[in-house]
Length: 293
Image (cartoon, one colour):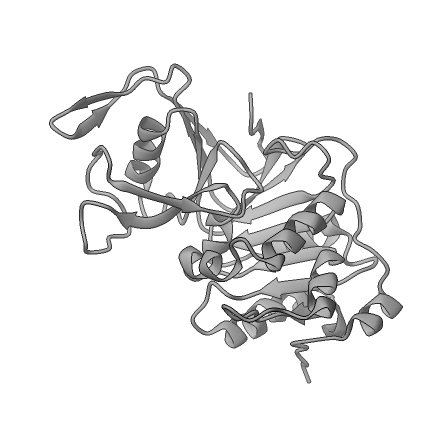
């Protein structure tokens, strides 16, 4: 029978597992020169077993350490822990190596839980609403612990909303000029895209998810026109990028689209946005590309 552990005392974890498994020795994307970790950013949808296996082996958690699942994006956070855990169990991890921490807003987490987060080999952020997640973790010990884990060699993974929170500039999905939520923008308009603060593991990048399936091209085009120093990365469903030392590998079943505005071109007329010589790259599974060129 499956078992889920919502909290494990620090001394138990440290007895069985020692430290975060380092991934690389060089610099990592986002200007985090001393970070040894990697980012595994999933565009939402289903996660093929091969993708989960890549997370497991890439983080080293199959050899030592443990996974911490952060479910705070989801309205059903306890259920999100179970759903996320099942694929790790099904792909060979013992149930004792998968820990779910459902942190609450305005509740100070214990030192043991924060230390456990800092020492994880893999931190996995579930889907849901990226604003809900950041509302809980922004400027807290939780965010600091994620950064410290990443710095020390941890893989930080996330799907859907968990992908959007990776960057410093985070797409919320809402439009400033239209109250009704739409899964994609219908126009390219100035001062329409809502940007909030994300975790900041990537800088000068905006991540969008469910990208091809939900035709979210207008969102990222708006972002790179409104913020021309930002690169827009759109990751489709059942697809991920694994970022190590500024290089991203495409993993999964579909495409990753990268939009940039190398000449910082932007025009505006009657509230509509325009630009010239924009760049679009479309990457397939197995492709490699540099986050910062």
